[in-house]
Image (tube, rainbow over the protein chains, first blue to last red):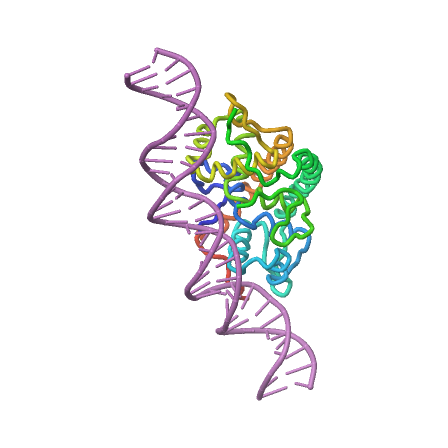
Length: 129
Length: 129
DNA sequence: GCATTACGCTACATTATTAGTAGCGCTACA
DNA sequence: TGTAGCGCTACTAATAATGTAGCGTAATGC
């Protein structure tokens, strides 16, 4: 799979807008999670990272790590293992905000779920009146 | 596929930490992109949204929309189409920061790519000395 | 030496997710 | 009564992730 970099053309962005590359890169499975874990545990070995992500398969982990490395967000240093770069740290601080957002979201969702009286399994209405 | 909500147990988070649910939800393909587009074009019809995302297949689009609806980030209103909720707007503003980050990233990446003299196709070193 | 442990990572078969296309049932509006 | 738009589903093919085993290497202990 090709690695989305700013300037590279994603599916619909002939313009190569950086945000599109970022969204594609970070939208891949486990990418955000790997970044989050490494942001809090740098440096970190491949295997430790794997455990932190709940025994994610080494195949995907390696894919994501390669992509993040090629885009300069993380790096691999001998003896230290994987580290987060300055670029990655600034990106990580955005994820910290996501963490804050998620907490508020959680408390609101909880209320909504309570209101729904355990109807959480229901699919949302099929657009009926 | 089950929809990750705060409180729901993701792969490795028995704790159900909100951030984990958020990372899983937003880490799915097209989720961030859909959110980004809807943040800038709300309300928006299904088909318009589809075009904005570069003719994404309706299957995934509908999956992502359903997930985002079940988690209260977006909503579907009759005659208006899809809209972003307050929850979604606050999340969207985080993505705006991602946009800002991506621009800086792009300028740094450009320098790095130039430095590399068109070796962009190369895989990163196989951990050799 | 020689087993043990850990490292980053690959191979490979299985399963899950996405892509791509066609079109349904419905509501306007002409 | 035709055309166009809507949200969305059905279906198959293509692609990506999972899960397990294990390679080649290096460091440690005996």
